[in-house]
Image (cartoon, rainbow, N blue to C red):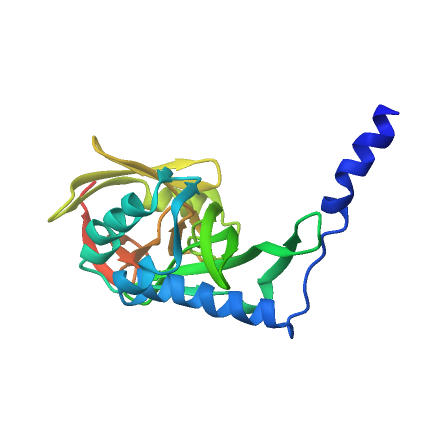
Length: 253
């Protein structure tokens, strides 16, 4: 009997299905999704943002924690995103957007769940990608955002286009030694198995060969280029970050 009752209680949840993308509900919430992020990230139109959020908003973020209440959320947006010196932008992965209608026991629509994936940009550089789940509630024919889950934030792959190759120990040994750079100071390069370890008293980094002279980091957008003379002697190490030279270190030992 208890099992039958439990199944009966689950029926409303089991019957909840995704609405068609051509439906009125899907289109309304898609517009609201755009308005929410346009008002917060893209334009900082806080007056418009206030009209879309329920008073008892709860915003759960997997990196920044919990924000409770409409007023707190608006204040955090005002003093955070809206004061950033950088140009911030959010883009929805359009094909990822899903909407699920929620009805009460009389069949009346009272809420909807909206799910999707989006990416964030700072000065046109892609930042994190994340998933979101929004609970919208319907009050007097108007939709308000009541609950937000923002999760599975992932940073873009570092040096994702790089492909590691194998080179001989003899070649690796030519790069080992001591280098000196104007900004960084003295830097040591050591051979570790099939890759190089670059370090000093403030940092340590493993770099991997993509060619006989170019090595890249798997943790930061850095490439290290070793420059040789006509006899094959290593003269210096050039450090490239995001495609631009940021440092040159002369080999001294």
